[in-house]
Length: 464
Image 1 (cartoon, rainbow, N blue to C red):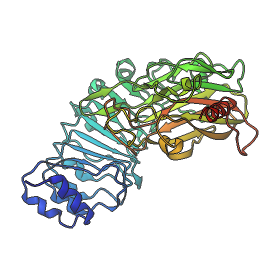
Image 2: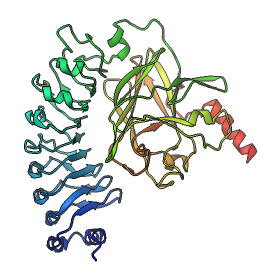
Image 3: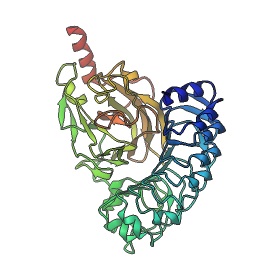
Image 4: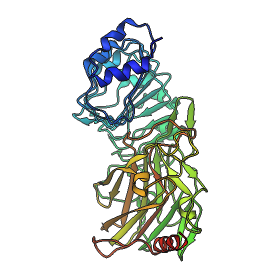
């Protein structure tokens, strides 16, 4: 009896030097090297795994490109290469793998690439090429992939128009084209379908002939081709702010709570795979992406956990959280210009001891702040558990900003790192945020903790 998993791991650690031996075995192969912090180049000898069906190398530190020898994987049905460290361009040999149903590649470094020739991949269900530096127009073969349920091309450099003849895409349940260079008019069928569609951050000239703001049935924040940095408030209502605020507090995923005299506004909408929601005051949020799992799709974008061990009322702020599988952005608008401190409140309430992973899961994501035309990566590979010193513990990440356009965007983005698809409720990866505070600051020097958190620390130490 041969343990294929043992063989694959052993040969990998030897530099893949003897993978040719596996050619003689008529075995169904699954190769999963996810989250092993492996480095080096993927060798061409991977092509010897002609019986490979599933290939997963998420969350590693490889270099170089996906080898062209994958053309021999004629039995492969699923390829997952997310946060792997690999670079583009995408190999054209992918187009030879006609049994592929799930192609999930994200966050490639290096050179740009065109779309690979996938016209013969009629069985495709998940086509996810996110943040792969694709510089091309939308390929016509998208219209003939009859089994497609997820099309995720977020955060590339795709230009040109969405062809009006792509009528068959109307049956695709999830279409994510966020963060590209698409222009022209948005086809009317995209506005009429009830599917999840995200076209935010593009350069469309109009939704329909009536102009950019004729309909707002899909997330279109910063959808149109405008040079100035404007908020959804201006795009939606075409009017300036009647007054300005100088602070903001949001209990992400939870009801309104008041802590030591500070009221955190509630944020309880369950959310959707593609959505923009605006509050009654001066903030909103958008989500793009849906949680993937082989047996189904989760639509739960709020997590609750009442097992926190520190005293009330502070636990109310951390017992709920908003989660996202890809990108979650909070928008604050109608802020008075000036110096602020942003406090981001986190506590890992999903990857806990009552899940299959216990406390061993890794949630890793990036944090961006945008106050001008260009967003800034302020925290890379943020891990809540590492920062807090454990699960079910609070931690605050404090960031000073200078607001000059009355607007702030706070974006949390999953770049394919950390644990993926391994716990019951399917939300053990991607961004998680418990609360957000924006308060006047005194410049860019050291920042004090908010007063309610200082009281929390004092109360905990007194009771210890």
